[in-house]
Image (cartoon, rainbow, N blue to C red; front, side):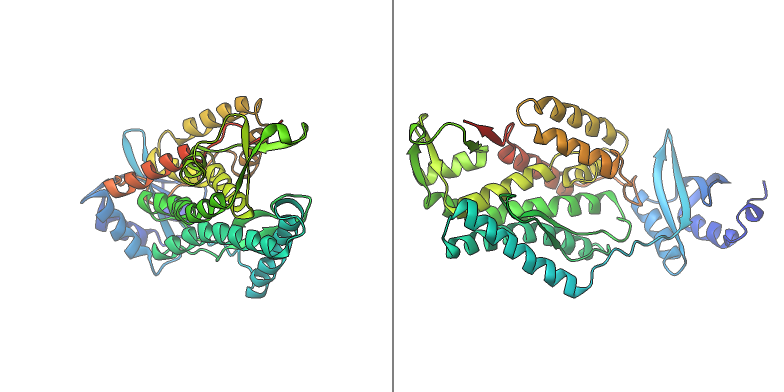
Amino acid sequence: MDIENGLSDFPFQELIGIVQEGFLIKSFTEKEKAIYLTVLPKYSHTKSFEMIMKGLEETKYIPHYHRKGSNYQLVITKKVWNKRELRQVVHIGLILVTFLTMTGSGYIFWAPGDLFLSILFALSLMIILGVHELGHAMMARKRGIRATLPFFIPVPPPFPFGTFGAVIFINSPIPDRKSLIEVGASGPLIGFIITLPIALAGLSLSEISLITEHKVGGILFSMPLILKILATLTLGEIPPDSIIIPHPLAMAGWAGIFVTSLNLLPMGQLDGGHIIRGLFPQHFRKVYFGVAGLLLMMGVFWPGYILWVILALLISKMKHPGPLNDVSELDSKRKLYAISCLLVLILCFMPAPIVPF
């Protein structure tokens, strides 16, 4: 096959020359505007791939390196950069509007009639959510990945927290599995750390009340394991016939922990999905669908999990693009990040976050 004629706009000889710097080429073909090469690394997977990345740095082409059966495949395509950006004024506007909606929710639900405590609730939760996303953004930029700054999604009352959270956009490919795990883990880990003192302060200011003193027909916010530990440290043993009347800071902490647990679920392009994709490049979809099935069954206890699975399916279709270098092995440091996130998920997860009483 005359592959150069099949790819008239590809500088074929130049690309092959770059590939041969780091790999032995066993075979190649062209399909769907890309060159597919079956290769063997001349050096380590990391070193060979980095040589190709450096060789293609000043071109409009980019390599993708992965396993295919018992072989290694290198795919060269044209670069396609995402340009999902918001102007600075929009970022600032979303922050201000979210602050207002969260303060309004605090004033209605968590500190009725108390503007100071409502503002404290809003600022605390915004710090938790903002630091979470800033952790992703800063780690991405440290690894040479184009990422936007966090922006908030305001939701007015009667939504009880005033926001659907904060998000960032990743606008360039993730280079390797190490970076994928680091970017996925950095947000929930730093967000969890910043949540702990806020939740601890809130619980120390909360009160214990007999459940019989409250009208039937309300709702209870379940206590994840980490909040049970913090509550015991600050309030002592909670009698089984009693509930905690949370201070607004405690509710900000609860919301931060809840968001952390949802994001760490290993599905699609959630934080947990990034981590699982980095850990198991060959089998990640089995984990995605296994977790999705488990959450659908848990929807019997809390229907919100069914909605979360549907959203994950709609947004990602349980797929993940993966990193450019999908072959190089992980080191102990990145595996420790993944284990840390699993422990945080265990501490934060609630089978039924909101229950009636």
